[in-house]
Image (cartoon, rainbow, N blue to C red; front, side, top):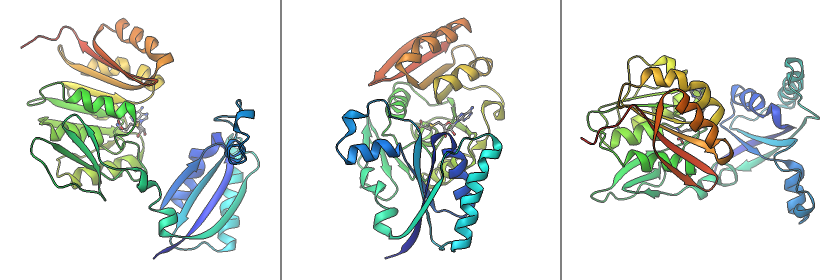
Length: 309
Ligand code: SAH
């Protein structure tokens, strides 16, 4: 059994990304964020119902694990770096740092207990540590999400994988904007796409996506950045990012989508769906179909009419 040093930093929600980055730069093997401390405590105390307004607010606990233990001095330095984020205009709040030694099972594998193979039509998305014996007529996509988003369990990803199966991808060029773990680009390749391209603004996602492409023996070299990093045009562009980013990228997407090209957008919450649809219409896109799961909305738009041939 391996032992790790788990360092917990309690900080205001708005600083969570910056703190995660500091921890990763300090050599953390993984970072996990536990939302809303006050709410968690209230729930633990069975007082959750009395705090309906606190969800999503204020302090979060960011936990990182290190295989090489940090000394007391290094920890103090870490605490100071977090407090110094204030100087960059981030309101870190009252920062607290705790640490303890934990064993493997407590840290590395706990979340893995919740990620099992999932069936999405004929596609099976399986975690890299739980490979299934292959069956005919199934398409297997093996994913180690690491620190990136995209296991297939989120409705927004699920609906994109469903949509990819509704078309014949042979001879098609598919772009995955905001690839995360690479799950959608890899699925497109496994479903027969001729060429796939993937980009993500997050360097960690680019790394994870590369590893997953290798794992699946798919020819994919993801790039760091956004849609402007890809040249040419695409038959299908998939964007599973939040509504604000989709709206921002729509003009560029339109310019890269030839007549009959398709755009899949996902990751849109119900309340923003109509706004995204209107923006797409303004740019001359047509809605082909939509799908909904819980509070999440998926649209397929086309550039001009899609022929039936
Ligand atoms: N495609 C995966 C991951 C979606 S999460 C899936 O469907 O499960 C959204 C990803 O988009 C994140 O990895 C985030 O880093 C990336 N992202 C956010 N804004 C972006 C932008 N403007 N351009 C490219 N990628 C972006």
